[in-house]
Image (cartoon, rainbow, N blue to C red; front, side, top):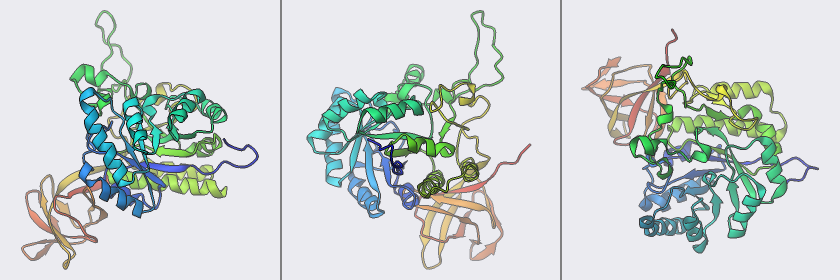
Amino acid sequence: MSNPERPNPIPELVVGVKNLAAASVCKDHADAVYFSLDRFSLRARAQDIKIDDLCAFVASVKGYGLKTYMAVNTVIYPEDLSAVGDVLDAAGSAGVDAVIAWDPAVICAALDRGLGLHISTQANVSNGRTAEFYETLGASRVILSRELSIHQIREIREQTGMELEVFVHGAMCQAVSGRCYLSAYLLGRSANCGDCAQPCRWQWTLTDDSGAEVELGGKYLLSAKDLCMIEHLPELIDTGVCAFKVEGRLRNVGYTATVSGCYREALDSCRDGSYTTEQAQELKGRLELAYNRGFSTGFYFGVPGPDGLGYESDMNASPVRRQAVGVVLNYYPKRCAAAVRLLEQGLTVGDRIIIEGSTTYLEQEVESLVISGRSIRAAESGQEVGLGVRDRVRENDRVFKVGQMPTH
């Protein structure tokens, strides 16, 4: 439990990653990463890490000095139990530091194998007695419900010595603890099995009983803004929780780099007592340039009102956009160049680009373009071009152009 006579320690920064490239860009910022395999995850589209890759992935991440937490947090059906056992056996062999779970079958199977256990936010832990219940089972940490206020979290901290983790940044679900059935009802794609189609992000029309359309001044009636607590970290630290979680296992690697870097800088300033309102605003400005749906403080300061929903924006409120350009065909280390097929659009010297793959992340300007041994200033869609690169890239890596959207 926290000691009121001395400051609370700075919480562990836990960052969601989808692959080794994402883990590599947050290695100097995070204390731990959480991830999932290509099964039994609430991010079913996170397919980069297979069971056969797990040992190598965990070894690489631990080589960065980071802890590894693996999510196994979907609904588990009878036919899944054998495969869940295989996944947990692999986690044990790889040396995963903890499994994130809420289904009792996964909890029991993880503990039977001597694995560390964190209770997922899917369990909706909302009071100290519930946290201690999971502690009696053998869990070392609970990831608290997202629907708690700072005051309630402080009360839970006073009621239990259990490790407590809370979210500080990332997507918010419009359903309690992510228990949403809208996608399953409309499309047969279960959010609770990781296959959410995100209908809450669609444009909707509200009608009354007579069929008349109700004018609300917006179209995205169910789309919750992203959580962003960068301005309120001192208050969260004062609750005595042990870990801050950054959501975003499906977002691009550049997002992971930006968000983890901003929160690391903020936490380091909190540690030495130098964190200011001005610094918080500057960091929030940097976060606004990464993918986001607009920002809110979630439930931390009360139940969100209309300002917690992004009525007017689509999936990305950031002025910065990534536009697909093409794919890497080959890499030539002696020439520091890559052969790139321009599929979606052309490239011009001076363009800002990102080259990204499951183990690659490179951001740079286009410094040189070559076709048939001749240097050129610009290449068009459909061409194969030699592109000067500053670091190693790999076959099938994707190339994106990055730039600020024009204002109207």
